[in-house]
Length: 444
Image (tube, rainbow, N blue to C red; front, side, top):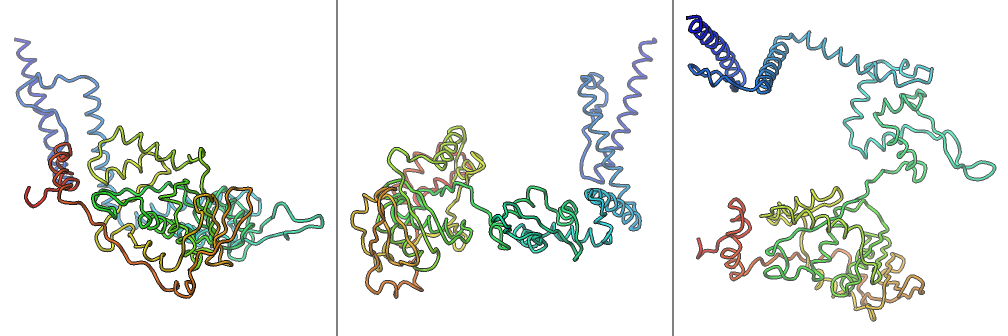
């Protein structure tokens, strides 16, 4: 009899708990569109048998959701005055932390109103990096001359000011929202080059990811010809350059791809048109043709072996994930969405330039604006430079204002498309089949 009463009491207690959780579920459903993961099952005692760890996790989730709900309800019920009071408290706390950064004893922040300090910091945080660096350089004054009686000064000192008031370096860092290392880099740039914009160097290995239908030849051919190579180089220099006027290029000593009359003519064309003042083009010595770019490509191949790639986008992501210095660039054709464009550089450059005699024996090529249309060549690093003219008569007058015509990839042949559909498509995941191996009209 006592056992029956205990059992009935247990069932009744579970029903009460179940009803309370049901009300809580309804409340969350009304406000958040969510349902709590309650474990109430009517009539079956065995369903409530769970491990202690599961009970703790369930209770923790419920408590967290209830806490978030109560916090949101409290914030919604706050008046505008109360919200402003909370914001003022946060601002006062941040301002107090900022003022503590000044430890020079002159109380630099006491020279300015609190609103002026905060407004300036918030405005600086919204600036682009280049604009912010220029603004900081404009607020710095050199406190000493660059020379002393014994010669040039090895280290300059600077005055820091804000609103025409002299402040310490720590206060300057806080007001201009700049770290110690960043400010040191800006001062070094300011000392060496003056108040000119700071530029970010490209440290990525660029890999152009192209499919068989995106090359200048049919079915993936023509991917290493002059038009392709020069188009990619032109895109890289135009898009990822930082406005430099002197350029140093290294390349493998490959006569068919990198060392030919069209690449030489293109570099001379860049100097003639003013895109660069000087370009030095160096071939790597046989046996020393490995560099950091090869290392980056090796890391991409290593990750590629462990990845499933069913589209060009996924292949690009492999390059992006393989290393922090690898960058994959897709050819996304279609109007103005192309990341780069192919141009008929071969036909264009043949109009103005001649071949370079004995090009295969040279490892160094230099082009400069003072000798436009000429190339200075060397057989090795210790050899004497020799000047050779490669511009045709009246070529200098005809080049300005002209540019090669654009080329469009021919795509895939019908035979290649049918092969991909029949032989490759079955191994591609369904979501990428139409993109990588589309059907032809007869197969549709």
